[in-house]
Length: 247
Image 1 (cartoon, rainbow, N blue to C red):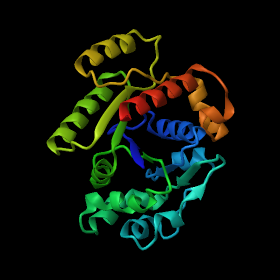
Image 2: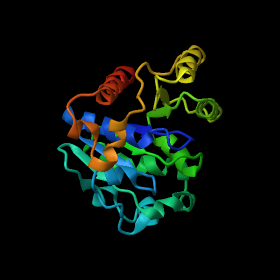
Image 3: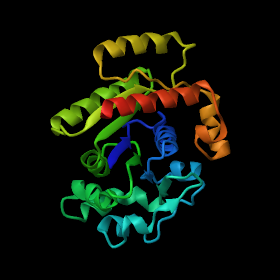
């Protein structure tokens, strides 16, 4: 079981669309796949038409009084399940802090699912917190979408420093450009400059496109309502590159 977190310190950079679309692609290749919507806003849950509600809330889930497999929901897509969000997830830091070894908690909770799923995608809220520390410990890959702007790129440097300082050697950081507008000269110049400074940035990039925004209207991943298009091709390229890097 590979655990992949879609994460960035900054919000509004495409974390949820990344988790949703890559999970759909994994499932379309007949890999048993789970998305855990850790964001109290519940965007992944919304896209999969699942009510963002966990009986007992995040506190009972994190404490282990409620097993993860008891709250996992099937989606409309074969091989793809969802652990939905709950508004109580806004207090997951407190729930984690009430347990021994809080940063190891998510890893322990996910371990019993190892025989059921090939891939687990964690859709994470934007911050550096106890929850994000637990996500880092549980994950093997940290997929980090970044917009080619100064502030977004600054968060990449902060994230790299944090991973280095915490000695998270097990964690593969895989940043990639998201919401790219090729009409903007600044985006093109920034991408070229940043790749020279951060060679670990993936080659695949996700465009700023209306069909990605349309996911909110359709309430499903791109591949479920369209057969072609540059955004779908971009996520397919990202999936292929992710698989190559993980191998």
